[in-house]
Image (cartoon, rainbow, N blue to C red; front, top):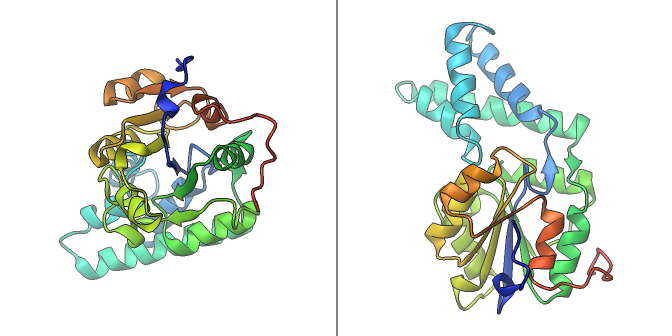
Length: 242
């Protein structure tokens, strides 16, 4: 499951880490926000339409959550815009009230990667306000070199836009030197489409090892806490890097 000779870590400059399912667990708040949004738009909870939309959400982990709403209400632009606004409002409220739960060892992993000389980008499909709220609740402001959401880059995963935006923002000379880490097929696809030669799947989120390997992950590990070992990062380094 790993890369015992450490070759995946050779000459890497940037670690691009997915957030939900990779460095934190959302405790179900995303689905609850989605359900509240549908109910507010008159979609009967438990009804066939409600179940179909929820299935569409569950079947596309790693993709933009608002895209499911935009696609469903595409023929009603005003309603689609309201759906996106309502979803983000519900999600923000739940994040502020309940927070999220970090994956065990995630903060230390980020610190070890930075101590090993890699810059780190944390990326999510959520909006910027939600992203910042999550970072604040976890006390992770300043933990990474950069954080990104789709509005910063253009398109969400599985498109490569956020990976490439991180490359430009952090002045990385070669996308092949980017380590991409995520828990979904969409994360793997984004890394491969961007040109990364070090795409790592983790088994703490939506997809299992077999699905991640079928998507093309170069390595699959149990958790983000195992990723620094792939680049030879010292386990003795403190989690924070200043």
